[in-house]
Length: 407
Image 1: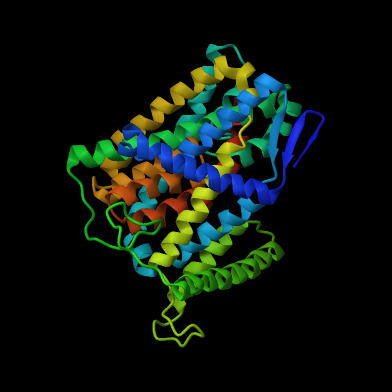
Image 2 (image 1 turned 180 degrees about the vertical axis):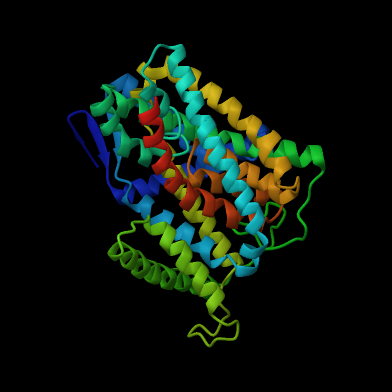
């Protein structure tokens, strides 16, 4: 940890430690504030926003900016999505076939609406159309990665000199809104339609708030770690093989598929060195998923540099307010009824809230917070990652240049 040119740089080990502290802060605040708990606001969101505001206050009073090395965060993302793959089954995928297609079609149509909304708000403020796209799928459903990838081209080809700042600002505020949207929407739908899970089952992420007697042995935990590492190993091989074929996918996607393949190809009675069954849908796996996702999201939110976004607040807040209202409306009046009005659908809506303005981890955190309060939804944890971790990037890669060329 050192200060250079007015920047306090925090290394990867200490950044991970701060992430854990932030997660505990979010837990304690949620325990004290009934509103946050009742509306299933994820603990890392509460703690991460608190810490990012604290960092902004430090910058405002001292002029010292805080920057974190987030290498450990990316490792946690791979860990988390590998657990999702291990917890998935072919039976769930077959069951989720129609809902998966329905959610994918809705998401693609929503992406078109999101870009048209951005273009409309840009025209309202007499801004270039490219700025509207930066406030559309480039930064919202696309997230920080897509915004960073497209901003230089938009700046060069369309004369938007602050494209990077606009894209990052929209992605950052969108992430906050997405984190706060999912829980309240799910609570509203569950309460209004009196929804409950079909059966009590082990959660995909975390431990139910109703259960205080769960016990996990050290060997159970270590066996889950071993399964994750085996899946990551095969995920790395799969990733390298796809690269040789000219197809580049994020590592967490290939690790998710590797975990899914191992879960469904290894017979239940296959001999393992641990002497245990393959740890799919065990409490150990759910606990590791919860820790990895919570710490990842806490580190993502605590590292936001809010002070860099103030100058762009006016047009961006208007744009995001419109995008937020549309996302909520589509969630309640389109996603929920078209996907069957079930408890699983309500959990999917929490995830869609995360997809619509935020990121894949945000969607998963929203669903995790809801299921820990109300009960498991394996279907939601299968179809939402497939839509937002795989298909969205492919569709966005076609939509963005289409809209840039047309407008």
